Image (cartoon, rainbow, N blue to C red):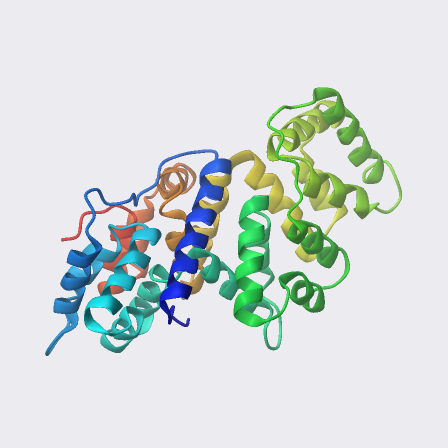
Length: 347
């Protein structure tokens, strides 16, 4: 991922990251981050520590990890700004030259402004042959309106195209329509729950699915993409009252493939967003091999939001700690950096 190359672009990235993080704070359900802004914070001192860690023969990975995993994304961008001011060098370029492999990937992710990070993940998911629908689902189904707007702006600035156009060009059918609706970023954000409207929506979903031959996908799309998360929780409850079974069961019976996965993801996020990410972390490390890109993406983007809650949900569901899974599935400085993001003291 390219680093911020000019002072003006660094300032723009800093402001955009602040904006995206504010979006997280406005719409998250829990508040147990594992990384919080350092206080006191001196970006020039941190820049000097990082310069010393990479100067001369050998690299002091321990110092790099201690600085970069104990600062917020906003603070890391300020450190990069001071690093260039003091030494006339790009911090990300130096980190890439001094590290390698998954550890390098993780450090670069930590040093990337959040809007740019999400934009690149979405771009890479649609570029080239094939589409990584799981990435599209993870990002588009979990974001607030504000977050989507900031990511769209970053996407156009980086790639010269519109995110909606690229999503539409790389998906099809009902899944394309759902992604398009989510990309508009026009979900209601009214915290008030209208119980009567919830009952009406529940009846509409029932009539569009289980009570007819075939499925009217447009009704599901309209409800799931336009109602607030609080309102959707009430809709799902009313659906259960009407039918005696869960909306998730109805979606499984009425849909298949990517559209099913996306709609079920929205249901999970409405009910328990930390559990949604806990399940994705488990999947990234389950079985042979590791989906390191997914692991890095979740650890980096959620550590300042709700990674503590995600870790709690992970242990509740799987009977083992997220720490133990990372320790068993990763190695070296990559493992130590991930654990530090989780809040585990660096040994």
